[in-house]
Image 1 (cartoon, rainbow over the protein chains, first blue to last red):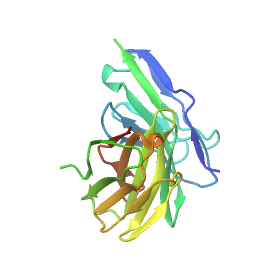
Image 2 (cartoon, rainbow over the protein chains, first blue to last red):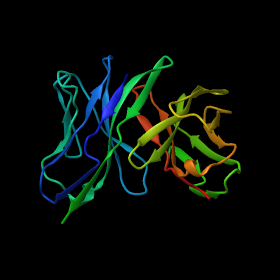
Image 3 (cartoon, rainbow over the protein chains, first blue to last red):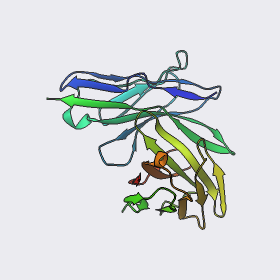
Length: 114
Length: 111
């Protein structure tokens, strides 16, 4: 079936170091992958949406590349900031009742320390 | 101007009681969703709706009902609240490009 796997439940980094959050997926459909970010006591908000295979998408300093060969859509940033501390969800769009549903991974809590 | 709003923002309920969570959107979206969020489980789909007066079961519908009286409003109903339903609940609406817009969430505690 369709699924999303985020292997790290908790990532702690020092400010200024690079960020990489892993996301792999399983689906038979040609579809989109998303990264949502949720700051403490706020709603999840869209951070990135995948483009075509092997094309990088960027937003707010974060970037991700969809690799269909490895079924991956890892989130990266060159230098972590304190304000990046948040819960990050990878999500897969799959067909549902003639439209699309999001299947979310279990989330990765990123904590950036000074 | 918040496009998806939820009420109440937090609620304490007693076991066996009835709870209604409300969601209102001004995005003019057809699709609306209810999720629950639990640590370690991420966001799981409870019910969704793609047209007024019709609702569909999501991945974890047991113990929940939903109601969509209009395009703008979508409610989640717990007829007999249980301890295991303590969680944060999010409502969302979806645009034609599959992006979902979430409400601020309702923190439900069942005692």
